[in-house]
Image 1 (cartoon, rainbow, N blue to C red):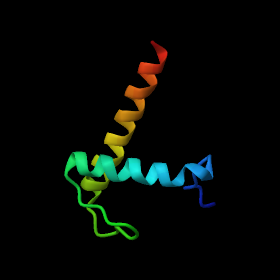
Image 2 (image 1 turned 90 degrees about the vertical axis):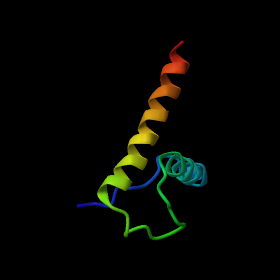
Image 3 (image 1 turned 90 degrees about the horizontal axis):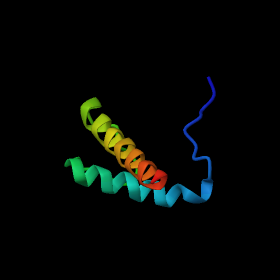
Length: 64
């Protein structure tokens, strides 16, 4: 299986990381720079879910 966790636009990596950290703060998850393998599935899912929610909201705003 190929590794596919790469941004489509590599120059956006810093912005995506900042977005992830902001989302983690909003849901109360303490992320560190680098390795975060000690997170529970629930914590990781809440960060990812919050990111998706915010992306959908932004997309819907652009449709208006």
